[in-house]
Length: 313
Image (cartoon, rainbow, N blue to C red):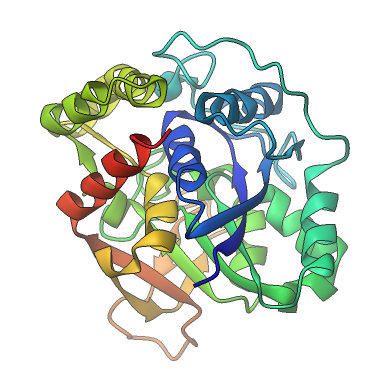
């Protein structure tokens, strides 16, 4: 089977870093055409830097990394240093990258790649706010029909919100961009908080990362040591949820996940529920399903996959 061609759109973030490492460690299943950085967890200057740090951590310095949009379509940027630390990758002591950013804008790279590759062969994997993807769709509407699939981390339904009472961070940061993407007609698979909160890094699982002994395994353990303090205090959970790696794990082992094909709409008008992903889980409207909304995963299988792949780096 040919490796699936993807573009990772990201705002690293420790969990973004783990998602990227999983993709780069899985060349049989995933071909990373490029990584596009967007402002989100931290400002663009840091997300573009962090994406390159992660590539170097994986020993994959040939992957092009592009800087993209530094602010949402029509809103002031909201960031999440309170979760990820001032650098976005707080925890391990990782060196500054030596690989340069690739010349050009992330949005143009997305457009050019979708035009150059055969239609229906490139999957977009957004791990942060959807600003770059929506901007590309607005700038070049012809590419929308060429996307194979969008597999993204964002939103919530039963788990409601993590940045407001009703909104998940990635969607909340740029709800107008999310609205454009969800209305695009592209096949979408969503990893919401409903599933990512089941991907908990317990002490046993984190000890397994550390015991790998390689730089990537130790760094992932140190990242989790740092950001789990926030989630354990907030949710009273055993450990931190690894949100974004659910996206790349799904590309490798979709059998680990289960969900429903439902309609999802994005709230963009109400300040009370801004950025809410309104999922018609029970089919109570006549709105056309537009999203495979994932609700559960085999957590043991997920962590076994992640540990096995990190060991390769």
